[in-house]
Length: 280
Image (cartoon, rainbow, N blue to C red; front, side, top):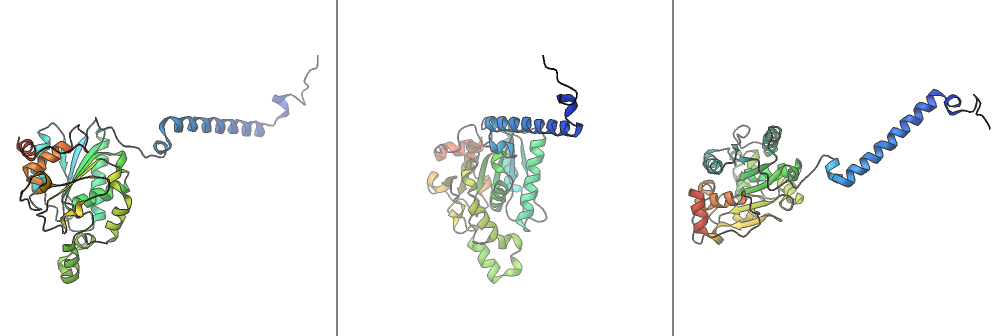
C-alpha cells in the first residue's frame, strides 16, 4: 500500500491562503446555484425588487388624490361612500396649494403608498381626480405602481393635457403656475406619461364627462390599455360638470364597482343601477 507523505497530502501540501481561496470559491458557487433556483421559482423581476400585478382578491387602502388646487371636499364625500363598503380610505393633502410642481405631488402619493404598505396593507387602490390622475399615472410609471396598486381609477384627468392650460400659459402666464404649465399638451411630464403606457400595466378605469369645460377636449382622459368610459354613453343626457364628477351618483357607482372584487374590465351596468349604488 502506498502512503501519502507529508509533502503530498491535501491537508499539508496546500497553503492556508489557498485553502481559504478554495473555500470562498465554493461559497460563490453555492450562492450562484441558490440565486438560479430562486429566479426560476419567483421570476427575475421579483429578484430585482419589482413585482406585480398584485393579488386582486386582497384589497387594501384606497388613496384619493385631489386635482389642481388641492381641494378635498368632493373627494371626502366620495371617500365616505367608499368607507361605507368596509374599505379604509385616505384623501391626500397636496404639497403647498396644489398648483406647484406635479413632481412634488408624485412624491406625496409615493410616501402615502409606502406608509399604507408599511402599515400592513397588501396593496393600494388609487383614485385620482383631474390632475390627481396625472400624478397617479406618473407615480405608477416611476415607482413600480404595478407591484403596489391593485386598481387605479381616474376621473376627468387630463392625461394628454388640456388646451385650457395652453391658453393660460400663453395669454395669462402670471395666472398659470407650474402645475398649470405642466398640464399643457406636449409638456415633458405628459410626454413621459404617454410613453410609459401605464394603463396596460395596472387594472385601470378612466372616466370622463362630455360636459367637462376644464379638461379640453374631455377625452384627453382616454388612456391606452385602460378601461375607458364616457359617462354619457352610460347615462344618456346626463349633465355632469368637471367639478361634479367626484360627487355624482353614477360616477360614485362606477368607482365602487371598479374597486369591487369584480374585474375592472367588466362591462359597466345600466345608469339606474349605478346611481342607486352611488347613493346607498
